Image (tube, rainbow, N blue to C red):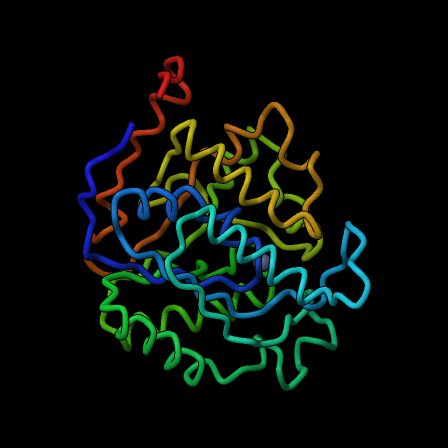
Length: 269
Ligand SMILES: [Zn+2]
């Protein structure tokens, strides 16, 4: 079933800290924007160079090369029309010495990086910028930096900003979600209470399949078991936002997936 391309000619910039954040936190939103004709520009600030790998690398292959390839594959699955890499270094967990490495995203001059992101938004005539919420979703220094940079860039470009977050009440019920392990690693709370969520995008079954495949594309970081469990649909079937500025393009996406996924059998498409 194809949908009318009602967002043709419009564009959105989505800023994330690491490869895999795009799939985990905003995969359904990006896929739906693309399916409805919008240009989706993904800006990824670091290549997650401090992560470890769950899979053997090829001879001569670096983790950054592997993660770049994984990001490109996930971006393709999610309908990204342009991928921009900011080339900052992963900052590591809160308090790590890597936080203050001169190339670390967390140590970057937020205004300077924001000017680059705002320039992308202007080149693309984007009408909205998606970035992390004020607590960095789970407090990771790179996600906090991505919040500062995204909020500044949205102001510079004069566009609505959608802060990606998670509904902690919902995820308390569903478990498990990768954010649980991530928050254990930072030893900080994650997300926001359900009452503070301003916009929810609920996935259709097909969008959720794509989101799972995009998460799985990051095989060096995420084990198959992490997304193969029975509660996957409920844990990953929603994406949550807090908005700054007037209602915009993401508000037009609606939550049409909810009824399909959780109230009725998925239609054959
Ligand atoms: Zn991340």
